[in-house]
Amino acid sequence: MVNPRMLQLGTNRSCIRELFEYGMRRAAELGPDKVCDFSLGNPSVPSPAGVGETICRLVRESESRALHGYTPAAGAADARAAVAADLNARYGADVQPGELFFTCGAAPALTAALSALAVEGAECLIFAPFFPEYTVFAEAAGMRPVVVPANTEDFQIRAADAAPLLSARTQAVIVNSPNNPSGVIYSEERLRELAALLEEKEREYGHPIYLIADEPYRELVYDGARVPFIPLLYADTLLCYSWSKSLSLPGERIGYVYVPRRAADGEKVFAAVAGAARAAGHVCAPSLMQHVIANCAALRPDIEAYDRNRRTLYEALCSYGYECVRPQGAFYLLIRSPKGSAQEFSDRAKAKDLLIVPCGDFGCPDYLRLGTCVSYETVLRSLPIFKELIEEA
Image 1 (cartoon, rainbow, N blue to C red):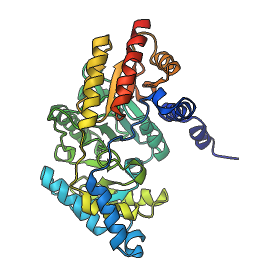
Image 2 (cartoon, one colour):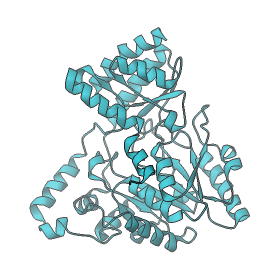
Image 3 (cartoon, helix red, strand yellow):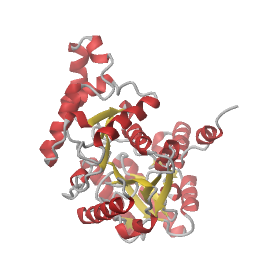
Image 4 (cartoon, helix red, strand yellow):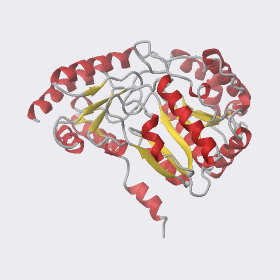
């Protein structure tokens, strides 16, 4: 006998992973230059030079036990101090090292945060479009996910859309900005409106409602855009972060949860995050990567290649007649299916070895996502196929 829910999750994988693995098989059959794979958000830009140099230096100069041994569960002191110093220098946020809990990337950060807040009967609001795993994480934590329908006018969040879905059972609200899959950065005005609504509901319901800010794309922004630091706008914020995208380290699994002590029951929430991580088998985040972050917390990515892909695809697809959401950050492009369902359009594209993800699981069934973190040659090869597809529609 096996757990039926776990069996379902293990046998019915995400549409993203299915397309990605199909693309790998096709590339092996035809050659990688014959497949235009926009399925996965896998960084194509190398890590900043300082990351590789730091890894090599640490391996050469450090004793094995110091470099590869256990750290405290919440993280090495120097890594936590470096991240706090970087956040404070950028945002004036008064982050304390003891408010940071290092995790194996943003996904465990989110699952620990959700599990820490999952009292009996709890609900979690999720703004569409959203990363599909949010619903998996919430349900696994014991929360009922409640989806706020997408605002397809400008893909900003709207407090008015969330208001009727909030209840005394609401324990958490997830926001993801810059957003996967739209690339939209939620404006400070809209975030303040949401914060005011949540503060009003906290008073009405008599308990905190925590805003969980998922920010792995924080440093990937274009045209001088700015990402608001949400803990400065709403006290009861838990911030989840990963260096997977900013330092091109997705396979190294390093991130953190920031739980401000000034948040309601902040010390208890931090302890509950630690307890949730423990229950999930967390011992400590990868120690080598913690030492790397201690030395590289202030490094930033070179996003020129992502920006060129973004501009080239957006301008070309709009000229062909596609309806596209102009991304302000991240490395995705959201397009509306020009005719028929997004799944049907994705299948038509797949038949031409162009892999784009239908967004039904993201809460936007009429849209498709392109991961623009690919080579520029892939972008150029894809354009005639996109033109052909819309002309056939």
